[in-house]
Structure formats: C-alpha cells, structure tokens
Image (cartoon, rainbow, N blue to C red):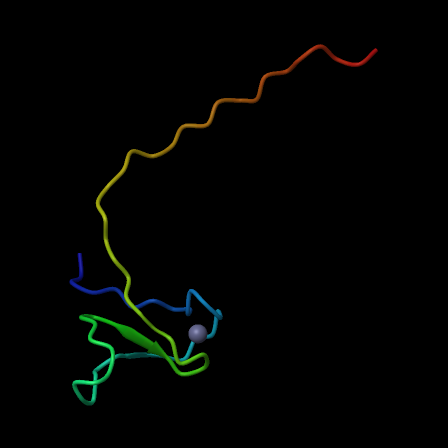
Length: 67
Ligand SMILES: [Zn+2]
C-alpha cells in the first residue's frame, strides 16, 4: 500500500487540476498533506478513517403484487 494516494478530482468542483499544497508563508492555511485545486482555489485533505465491513444488501421485500 502506498503512503499517499493522489486524488483525481476536486471534491468541491470536480476539476482535475490538483497540486500538492505547500503554504508559502505563515498566514496561509496550514494543512498537512493538503491538495490545492487550481480551478476553485480550495485547499483540502483526504483523511483515512479506517476500515469498515463491506455492506451487505438484502433483496428488497416483495410485498403483495398488484392484481
Ligand atoms: Zn475545485
């Protein structure tokens, strides 16, 4: 597993022009491992929360059929 996976689309505007974000001075947003969207100028990070069991979907109930 790689340490860092690259997001392919901005979660806010959907554009693909994402660059690793590095603050240029102390006044800017401080975010570790952030991404900067060149289109909407948002800076965001992708956070890993853990593993979860795969959902199991039961077939929907089939009620009484219309006559
Ligand atoms: Zn964007």
